[in-house]
Length: 291
Image (cartoon, rainbow, N blue to C red; front, side):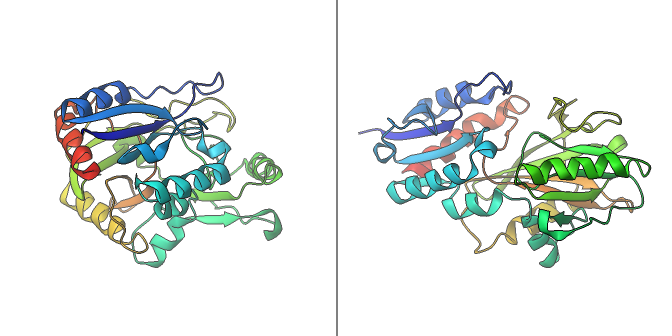
């Protein structure tokens, strides 16, 4: 009997215009690699997840609106069958306060502060800075501010707090405007491929405006320093879990050295359309994991 793999995605919604371009190709590639593959909506109550040998979280991009439900779903599915990545990783990675844990473990990260509603007045950086929620994706509710825009920034924080969100504050990493952001994708514990993209937060863009999550994407060959940092970040994930896939997003600090901006372990875009040569390799690893 063929192995069965579910690729968990999100239900199309009018206010989410993102499209998982990799999903149809990945379903076909996993099928060609010897398993029965099917895309399933993660929040579909009629899906029997226990019927699958592996549930692969792929493009559950609306989870930020339903975090409690999503993490509970991951726990349930993980108790029924194999879930990739594991439910404990899902729970840890949904909130960007994990950046503080990485920094405490000695991993070079973008300096980050956090502010809940109960923390009182927030100290804002002296230079240009970024504010976004600790739970979010696709630059949702993220804004870039100049030193003379503190009033607007505090209004942004108040909006996040009113929605029950924790605010994340970081200095704007200016080198991203010239060297971009690099995303290193790992599969089966090994580096697979990388991309470089341009800056998302352009000056003057309102925090609640729609943004292009991945502008000017192109293939990238990471430096030795980037690879070493990505591997160091993954090694610092609590409990050293087995990760089927991971994406490490890096930017350059003022000194030119790479720093971790985000660690994407739940539903990252894998950019298989940029690296089609990775598709059959990834599919084989998925089937191997299912077995």
